[in-house]
Image (cartoon, rainbow, N blue to C red; front, side, top):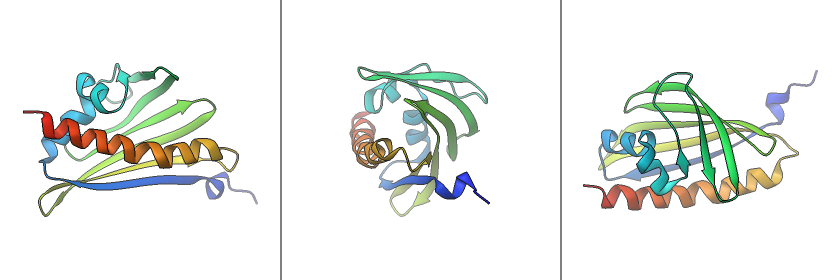
Length: 136
């Protein structure tokens, strides 16, 4: 029996931020803030909303799966043959909020996308930290 989910991999990045969940939530859900640390988008925090991330290299088609304000956000991520799911989880930490990002669904034939995500998400998280620190 061949189970495709056993063959998929996940990229997980966790980081503690010295900011309350509400501030991080805004950066995850308001298009002008998303653009400042990730990509341009027409995101809206509504269940089943279809949106696109776009950058100079191309675009990512997405659909909102889960919206739990200040707690959890999940959406599909479809680009260049990759069909995956990105999930953000916010939880209290000692000095603020722990943010966990998981991107699931990398097949064995998607090594380049997997390695790109392993490199890219920590870079995006660092950019998110700069945006959070500069926002009033």
